[in-house]
Image (cartoon, rainbow, N blue to C red; front, side, top):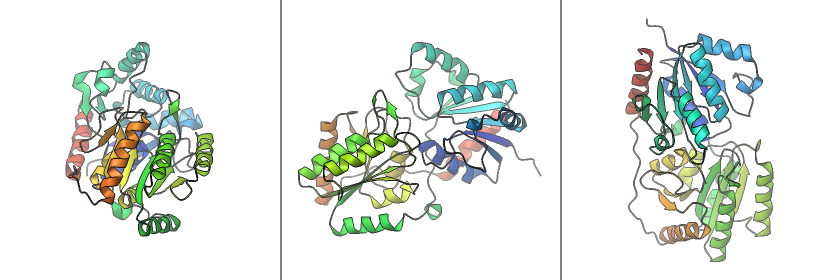
Length: 353
């Protein structure tokens, strides 16, 4: 019997829910029988059963890198990315890095440094086609592959009873249900990264025009952005939107919430390849997203941080839904066998280098 390849994965581990942590969770589910996976968690949420890089247990970290065959890096933190690659090279390990996003506003100096360090990897996965133009990467090492892996609905936890009841009530009142989410309420470029402020303001505008909606915004973690969350609550109360906007801090299945919604909104001012969007298209939902990066076919785009443009696109979609206008949608298909083959070929080819 062949010995399983040991693969050490570094990145934010679920919970809290976020694009990368959900991707790693599904990756583990797909391959745990084929490979010997272990993890270095980079989340702020310390878990007793997973080694966390923030513990500053240097010996424990070195031991995990030393014992692995392949170091698979999904770090969101720019410093962790570099540390993991450098230490992996020191221990002469095979290294794959997935770059889940790269801001176009990085200075030339950091682009040069990042390019040099990323090129130390054996393979570089880029989640969208815009990232290569921002870095000077070895084209022979680069693969463009979005991070979407289809969810298994049977393994998704049921929504909390109170939320299911609220959605049922909204349906009985003929409300259009809109949802959006944030792993945490970060700031980017001195703006609300996930666009919570835009969602509240757009809901106010839509409701004032007489449309009946329920907007559900889920925040996975408040370890960052608690003040933004509380300010959002106050704004909802100030605008008398308590029956139209639910701002919730809770770990739940956004996949199941997506399935119950009419519209999924992604108003971020920076992004990689958003899992939320691909899941919504996969489930044949209407999706509106900012044009900050290239989006999957089937996404309705609005100009980033443009309230008026967002309101125009949102209002048109609500009118269509209320009028039962079924515009032809792009439905994302995903062949799990192709995903399995991609990663198995990738791991094999890197181990043979």
